[in-house]
Image (cartoon, rainbow, N blue to C red):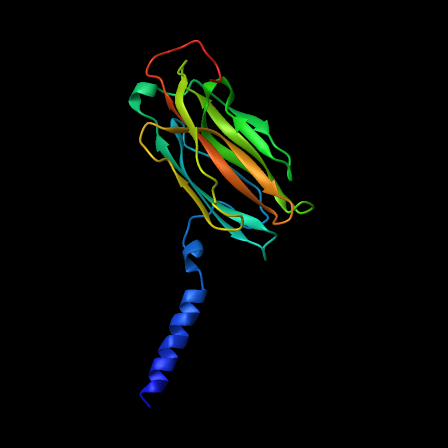
Length: 191
């Protein structure tokens, strides 16, 4: 009789472990196969991005974004706009024009390619220039995994991304372009 409770406990633990409730607790901004338009409040920029993949739901991802106010020294954005658009199924590299910072994301799902098109919402902060730029490693590290990117250090900002699409696995990997911004005005664009 002592082995029956153990077997039931083991079966219950295996069932709980097989489920992935973590993705259900997030504040996703979209449903699978649904387009979205996300913008940070005025004066804030993206600082964290999370996604969850499901092959059963159109080889699509749920997305979640977090924003944070920019440092006082950067000032308020003087102009914001939607930048370059990529087409579903294509590789894409986009850096905000005019030295802008990413403050939002727009995406539309296409059933025909089981992929999305993307566009960044960029904001311009006076004439500040990027420096000490770097790209993150692939996010997610492997196709079809959960992806998460959080700005690694205060003072870095997302300026864009490079993304590759696997036509076989029907998923994307991202490398986010992160930069610091000068504390003074400069005359250069898109460094």
